[in-house]
Length: 204
Length: 100
Image 1 (cartoon, rainbow over the protein chains, first blue to last red):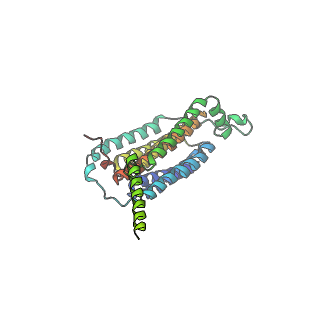
Image 2 (image 1 turned 120 degrees about the vertical axis):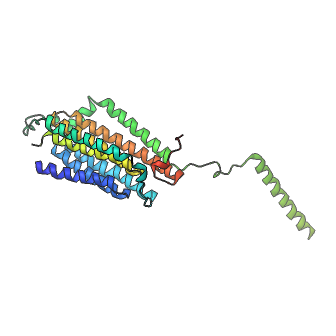
């Protein structure tokens, strides 16, 4: 178990570092996909099979495909680094790093939770086993029905909003506006032309 | 058995990498990916506590966080596309119309 944790944690951290160190966003996206898959593996070690599957399907599948699509659609050229602007960040980085180390130290030294062993097969009804689709569905559609419905409304708003934003705006200049006077003038012109050809024909 | 603190430490490290990315990156798409990274670090904490406290609630929260992340990615990428259409850039420093 420890070996699995160390393996997945190393992959996740390596992928995360790849996300922030690469200049080209497509490599960042690949790093993020690696991290997401490693996190799915970690979820499996925590008895969360359903969440691990959803992580792969929704995150690494759907959301990252959206990212990659947008990166390729916009066809970004390599941008030069603008380190000069961010020189002051160096002074921010040191205290933040110390804070992170202190936090990790605190967590490892102070937090000591031993997990309850998972119940043996058949000891509890299948609806109460942690991490199965059944237990999550039970909780989702009874106790947490309201957040679930709110999520569906949120997604609906996201669909409408993204369609509205990404649609190409038709500006007034693109649409030719035809006024009543113009139609009348065009008709008069046509009548004049017809009259002219008539008179020309009569002249011959 | 792996202690809880390992998961929490890993989660803190991943979250910090995400914060550093948001501070360092100038490309708006890469910035978005760093936000996703931070959301995932929090998800790991949720699942870890769900396992160690033997509660399904944490995993449910992860489910909702994923839905919110999907909605956020959809709207955010649509904003990025319309920003690129109007400005021809993905650098966040150049999108400063509201700056005085």
